[in-house]
Length: 261
Ligand code: R5P
Image 1: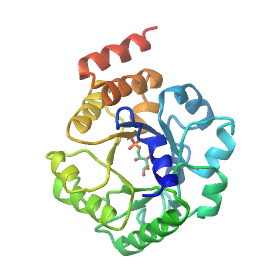
Image 2: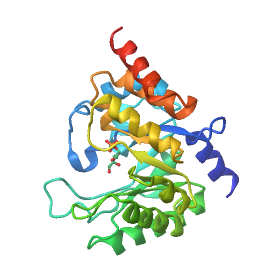
Image 3: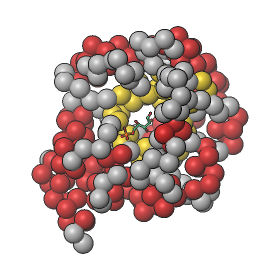
Image 4: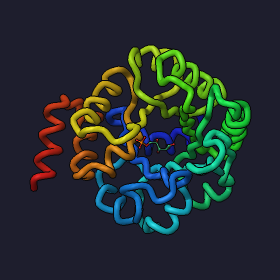
């Protein structure tokens, strides 16, 4: 891995702990103004000091984040679908690497839809993105999206993560599952987990704890942070787990103390 690639990755996965707390706010690229992100700038601002990186689209980056911010950006560069369209898996690349470079991003992110009719298209897009990423030293995050008919089980998620790594992704985002250690063992690049749909705060902290315990380098969480009744409390509690190896109860107490302040 060359210097620029390593340097960018180390801005996201922090060298002192080998872990990362990424904040995902890219949901609008197919969901529109989803709950909690109606005004992205307002949601993001108080969370910035507690996130190791921000995953978002170029539209929200340009309009909702001051350029003076030095938070590492993971730019969503796949899309072209919507929640009311025919198929969410029919994604293509939506941003050129030149624009990603102009935006000074630390990594780019693209979803792959293994097992869907658009599997080949999305996997070839990943390969192309990795080729250009390698050229300019920009790491690629492959997001293992799940089709409606797919199970989020170890067999499927391990398949997706391994394929992403084999095609050259520099890190992978997937879901936590039973026997997650096997997913980690069989994937030669770092894994971060998505939070998924909003669940009760304690359960979301448990999810982060189990993922980190079982070998994920961290989380790339969205709804369980920004749809919480105390987003800052949740993000700080997740940080305690991921970076300081706090237990779920300790982290939950921190969340409650910040919420009740
Ligand atoms: C989904 O495709 C997006 O990349 C989201 O950023 C991702 O699912 C993580 O967000 P959440 O924790 O809300 O699942």
